[in-house]
Length: 228
Image 1 (cartoon, rainbow, N blue to C red):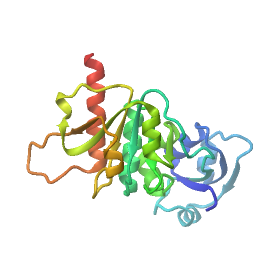
Image 2: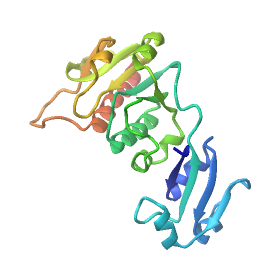
Image 3: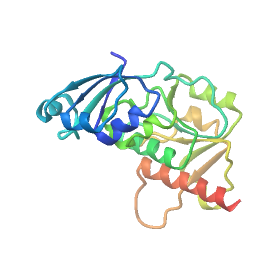
């Protein structure tokens, strides 16, 4: 509503300050201010740890909470070169944050979410992403089907009954779709897939968490790249 979000804790605020995100106000303890250099146009309000705890969503914020602006360019209209994750109606903020963090680790070029997915500026998502939200493009799309069709990229989708990821030759110029935790990839986007991929089940587990599944799949892309 206000176009702003909270970032909490020393490490995550540090990553925020190194990014292109605009920071409005920082609420911090004297200890944090004494050990940190901040651009002069950012307002810093010195508060006690007790006051900080009332501002933050976490019970024990680590010395600092920042108020930052949600970027104007939060919607993507064209997919660039490279590898992208598309999160289709993903609901869990922890899963979203984990996927963003993992995509950043493996050098993917961006993470895209359908409009009815989780809010990436949710405090739980930001916490799970561990600063990666500020280092990899994360955007929403208004029409995922149109975006995929226009991209001309190879489109992979994560399915329980897809082809074995360990026996699949993977394209580096692609989109990998991760679906909703309960319902998977929507029928509309499933029609646009070039290939379904899956992680072979070797034990008795019912399924994999979406964040874990995405991490395993991205790791396989990395292995493919090193072997070619």
